[in-house]
Length: 251
Image 1: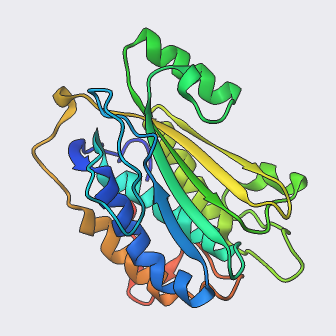
Image 2: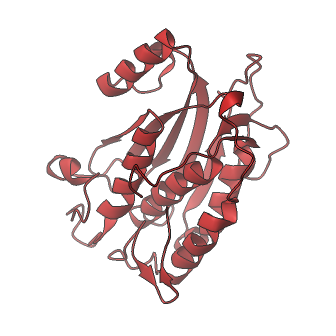
């Protein structure tokens, strides 16, 4: 997925529905491990500044419409939620939340990188989407955090877990957020869980394209991949690799 080959496909879509689709792909594995998957859009406000009702994975009557690249957003969420499953023990929880942000003061997490992006966004009248994926898992050691967004990083987060290959998926998420004028950060304490927060610039109607590659172009091969890997084996690769049917095409 080089910058020269990357194309953005903006369109209006329901964020709640898109998140539910990702959770449904991974829910079987999560249920096997006794991990709850939840989503919370209570802080989501639409362009009319109307706040959504509390929304969880069992109730999606409220729509949260955004104008963005649905396929890339779902790709990022697949990587983050699947990683959360790998590092969360039975009885734990993974939650996905999202909201629209207009200034640095709207950020849930204070971080200089994200704040700098939002200061530029105000100057250019650009609205952003902030998404958080939070787990109650084993957390990440401080010495491992610099490796998170590099290819083939090997983490030593726990004696019983060998998270081989995690860096590939997180590297992809970093590249996608950067390509949409955003970024992703991680906050984690060993034994206290991990929260990934990313922001991306929403498109404007003038960005809309008539050609839609369709979410299944990305979700079908990725869905096959996540169905085949054993998320109970903590050394499984997440977010990248090959299946018996060939390479996963993220481009």
